[in-house]
Image 1 (cartoon, helix red, strand yellow):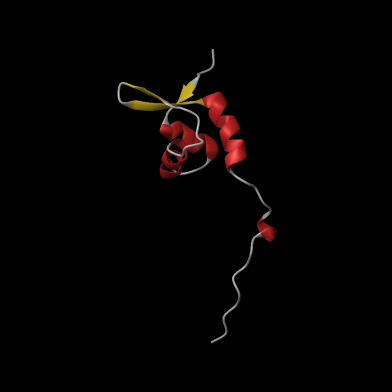
Image 2 (cartoon, rainbow, N blue to C red):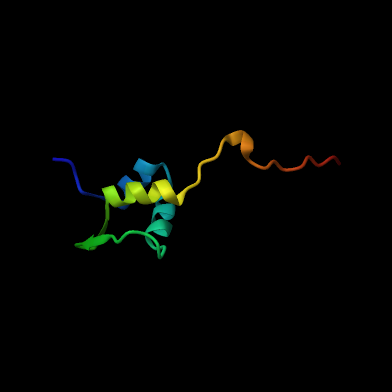
Length: 72
């Protein structure tokens, strides 16, 4: 049986983001609800997998705007 919930640390590892970014995401108004059990915040895996897909826009590295070169 696979787990239904994951911890903040597990979410950070799963999505390759920092723990502070996970907290930022779970505290946003459009975020799916989390569960608090014995003082531990747990995140529903299925709902957050879908949320993460829509929360970030992926672009190619070469499409990023580049900083102009400064000549001294």
